[in-house]
Length: 116
Image 1 (cartoon, rainbow, N blue to C red):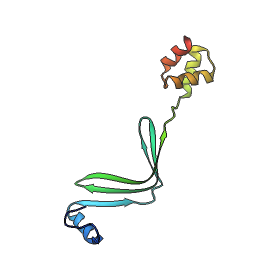
Image 2: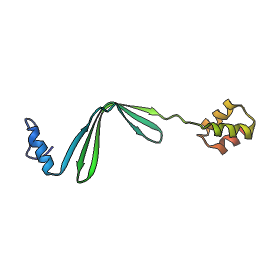
Image 3: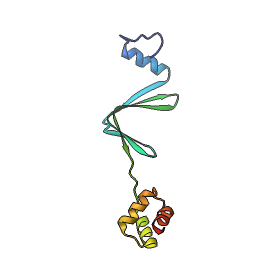
Image 4: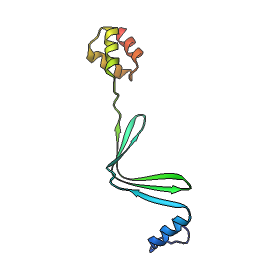
């Protein structure tokens, strides 16, 4: 990791001291159950996670190691939107919900699709 330190047999105490002199602080977070990274289309869930924070010149870098799985986000449709589509088009709740899912939650598009 650092020139002149060698790969094997490096003294951990010496390495820690050298990092401290360079202004690098490393801390491991304890008792982490899982880490969730939310993206626009999915959530990445990291279970059995080990999280290390390295602080260098005031900037923090997080290193996460664990078992990752990606879960697609499901579209959550508010009850108010379903009710509005039902009122505007006269369709059942099931049809209104289906139209909203097909339109990715776009009210106007769902109403137009059901009115056509």
